[in-house]
Amino acid sequence: MPLTLHGGSGTDDDDFKHAIEAGMIIVHINTELCLAWRRGLEAELAAEPDNVVPYQLFRKAREAMEDVVFARLNLFSGGKTNFDRL
Image (cartoon, rainbow, N blue to C red; front, top):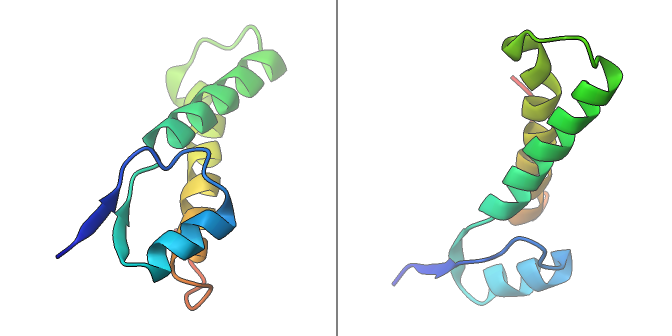
């Protein structure tokens, strides 16, 4: 039976590893992704306060989310797969 870890954002890496070893196959980290997006956007706005072009402003937000996704994919796979950016 598939087990899902809800509310995984903020969980210690070792705790994630133990949960996966115990049978968790789905891990939800939505808040972690939302925080990365927000911080990336804030960084872009601080760096370019006069920029009003959404696709340019969202670049750092997307990259910050990608950083979280790739780090988590590598952690959740036990380092067996090296996920690179597209």
